Length: 342
Image (tube, rainbow, N blue to C red; front, top):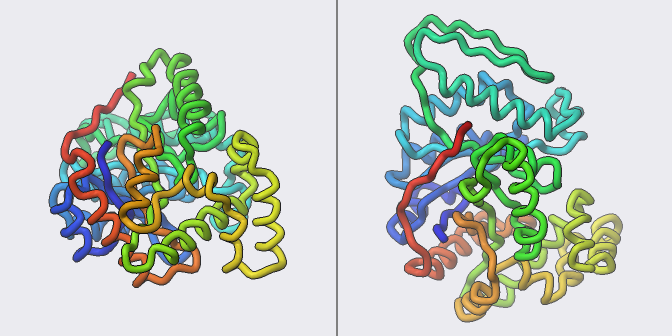
């Protein structure tokens, strides 16, 4: 396993690289662009892979995604990846003003059309003809040339995971992915999708986020913050199939009732130790090490992410420092990525 973190800022990032971090990623929201943050990463890092993790897929055209990736690749040659996520139907409709119907099929076409732009040589027309995207771009300027950049998709449900297996270079797993979810859902669906396209699922990248809050000075608070983050994620009904797999319906019902009419800071009290140990590394260094040893399945490249829900930037930075100290020397660093294309 290799480790990285969501972008912690230039100063912490340099220390993370020295401690063995091999990748940094960035999400986005109404006040932050994953691509702008990735440009900051390119400037302030020297060896780690950098990229959106994730960028809202349908909020941008294939051309815009590909142009941003090429721009990043000039600043960080050989170190760029692209992580895409569909977002919710409501967000796409009401925030972005775009159609996101049939998201799995649409995502597959988006990945292929972005790759068409990235693989085009100078003088070649960039063409793609699909159900959702139709492209016939004749870019006369000598600014193209084949560019290999791994494209990963933030996939949770069966249909999106199969799309990853058919078209993408790998999956970027959510922080709530448990060992059972990786084993019983992610892998079989990646294999099914890969088989449909004549690909080898073993060559797909399996990256993902890991909820991490390590603080030897205040381990109780670290556990509370990890529980609060898990609870916040589980307010979203998208993840009900994972909840059902583990039999956590009663706990999640209590979380959602609290969220709807109670105190958001109290959400974590409904997260059991079983849930916590299945989805997080937290507490002091000794407990985090025990939790790590108990996990049989973590992402091949894990973004060890501090809790963010109702957690200050200062405390998040403290958790990054704790994770850095905890992870240093535990996992291998270096090594590139293999990109499988048909």
